[in-house]
Image (cartoon, rainbow, N blue to C red):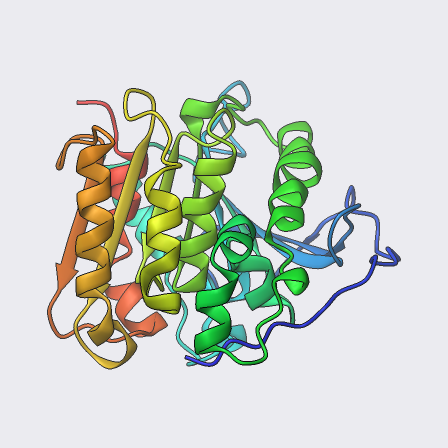
Length: 298
């Protein structure tokens, strides 16, 4: 997997007013509010898509957990999916799971990725700690170009306060989750490790652990949040890029056990035979991490 690390100077923020979101007409299930060019003091502006649960407009006193997801353009509308013109179908999956009583109603915030996707999703402190190993694999590797610490600051200091002020959320850690796929899985696990007081659960779907021969696994192994207060989901397929993942995920699973996580309780790792590294595969199984992270009370 090629890793293009692009440097980024201070962003010049010239954005539309994020307080006046535009409701998108995108053929999705339910209501998705699109915010154009949401500004940040830490990273360049980007679009947001905010999926609201079925009761949001009618249950005026109800407050909701929030799931923050990366690569937001790939979640709800196949017409704008960045890679395969297939979306994750998060809106359909959430609607079905809510109707079946399997998950709590929740707000899903899709954060669009930009041309700096890889530098923003690559765990920065791991890049610094294992720069020699990454340089061996990627001759153009530049740890100074990594922007993930600023990306997480954007999420925690810019985005989350806006979402909590604009929508009826449950803002506490136990009701705040983060999830993504591939590099988005890396930034999700890094995010819950860096901000354990903000995120109570994380999902790494087809998490791209092989870089640097598992250096990121080694880094995260010593940084995992308290299993008494957090939950973490992993999965992987067996085809295309995911074919390389099982051994590295096994090492991550061993670290989870050492940290005190208990499989089936506060941590799950699932292997999906025949699944490739694509939105098509993630769409087919997105109900699994959603149920684990947002599962309804028994």
